[in-house]
Length: 272
Length: 332
Image 1 (cartoon, each protein chain N blue to C red):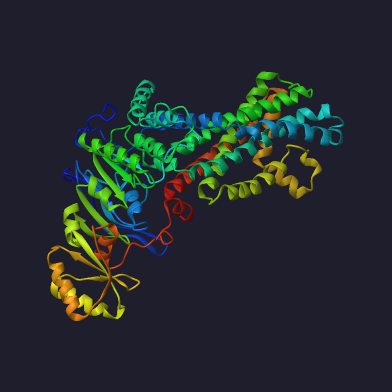
Image 2: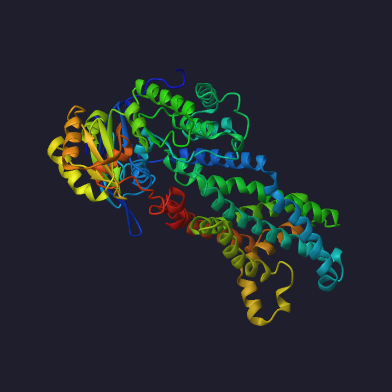
């Protein structure tokens, strides 16, 4: 019996009751790898970040372009960053839904019994999902490009804008991961998440100028962190600048992670 | 706190309550290192919940537990480095292949790429899964899944292995293979704590057995001791006239000097039979008393008998009472 060698007695083992940061990172990367392997097995999971951006970009451009900016062409510099933010944040909802489905499987019992960082099954899943956000970002820019959008500051700054969106979406995905952990079913995660998501993304400056709105709504749109993110991406992609809006978006992302990452891990541990 | 490492498991008064159901109600267990310990009981007796607490998957509501002297509450991470868990429902990733599963678990356990690959190949070979290694698990049979699950538990060569109903639902051949594997595990120095619903499985594998019912340990000892407590075999009688039951029990008490148990439906009497010779006397007594038998048989002890004798009630299907591991998660 080659695979089952003689057991090292517990007294001769080097046992630690804490997990080092290095091990946490290594565990996270392994769990992210697992997430990518799963995507390779079930590529249909990528529908929402491949087909959806195409449909939404084309739909909104032709629907609102003439009315809001005179022509589709003029609307694109305003719309593409907006639709990018909306698409990628919507994709982060799926993170919570899939996490719920995943946690219902037996393999999570094994993760809990392994001497690994407790956060790794969560952080790994969230890290793997940045691939989905990257795909969504690329698809949105490509569709925009095909429709005639040329980022004023060049492709490099547009990519930086995309990176900013991916980072923020990763942060926001902790909120949905929290719902994923506490909810009973995947369906209810989706329900709650969209309830939060629609006001946040539509009551922003993603599609229309806030000055056209009633004053109470304009007030909300202006403090909505999503608006700041959209403005920051527009600044980067169209003008090549990174100002206050960018910092506000990043600070908002940091706050979300600081609040929801511990909450999520604690809820996950309690379920464990 | 330093404790003797003679004991792989020490548990005192473990309690776990789900709602108003005391799934585990004060379980004491001590398992000597290097032995196989069987926890025997019907569905819903609290076996899985007990194992889940010892394996740090569930927090006990009361009581204390130690794995090789390490507290299961305060030193969870240490305990996890000493155990391997093979759950009732295979804890492997359905969407991935056997190789991918073992590679991921190996990497999580700190093996580097090359070591992980070697370990994976070894384990696949050992458990006869090499040919199916690349296929997704959805196409695996129950036995293959169970073997993969056990393989995954052995990556880190833990000194204590929990096996929750390792052969439930397996065909007799696969079951025999699983038994062989468990025996070889012990020969390498592992301690195995297994749960089972089958007396013969505990009999075949375990050095000591705890019988658990409704969240409590109702008997503990070697297989021989347990069987002796219910009689090597039992005498089963069905009377022609159920009205004679009390007389028959009295006769059994006087002649065989044992307490007979009447089955729940009230027509069957079961009595432990230590000495087959005395049964002749019993039948003579019956004839003299005018008690007529409709049917009689002798049965080797089964889990049913052990239960009937130890608890005064038979093996009931209590599935509905205790939520399964899956449901618990949803309800928690």
